[in-house]
Image 1 (cartoon, rainbow, N blue to C red):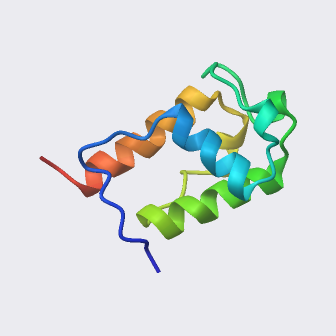
Image 2: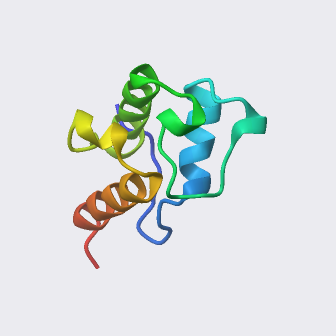
Image 3: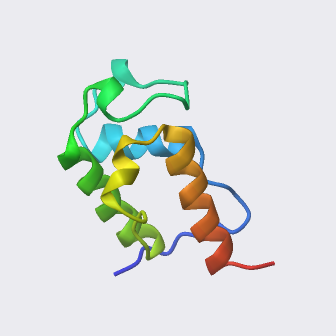
Length: 92
């Protein structure tokens, strides 16, 4: 079931990703980062955190990240993938 969240006017940002990882995947608040070049592994999160992230994206926005390889990519790539899917789902 998708949450009623309109993201068409507001892109997904690193702050949104950190919120999900903190509140749903166990990232300590003190470990939040502002560097989009980092990865889940670089901040001490494992594949379970990625699966949690996929689950949250599915519930909120109706899609998952493209594949498991995405969990090894920098946060910038994850954010771009989310925004691409949001734009495709909400064309102007």
